Length: 167
Image 1 (cartoon, helix red, strand yellow):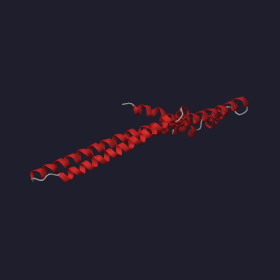
Image 2 (cartoon, rainbow, N blue to C red):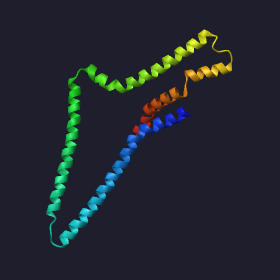
Image 3 (cartoon, one colour):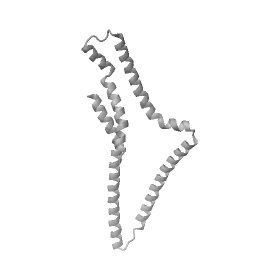
Image 4 (spheres, helix red, strand yellow):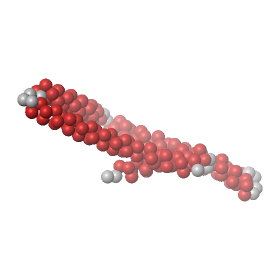
């Protein structure tokens, strides 16, 4: 049961960034529409009274410049990272790209090796399993619920994120 819950949780967590991005984008667009409507109403009211909303126009321009500056900073940071990665050796770039998958592979291979070792010991010793109850107890040790929950969470995260990435 814990494996199933862990699998579902891992799958859902792999899509959480996309879901949050969707809601953030939706909220940003709604906020921008409200601001545009309020700004238009205000400018129309000022134009009716003969005033030009020069001060507000300057504020909007200042905000746009600030947003462009922030976007440029982020773009420059990503470009600098890309330039750094171009200057490093190919080996370092490869290591940088494989860190997370490598940790996952090590964990999965460790689980497989430990389970295989225990299973091999149990079947070669011959005296541990005398009836079906002993076999059930041994398999509970080899394939524990916590271990399967960890493994299913990892697999669900990696393969579940593929589905969330499709558009």
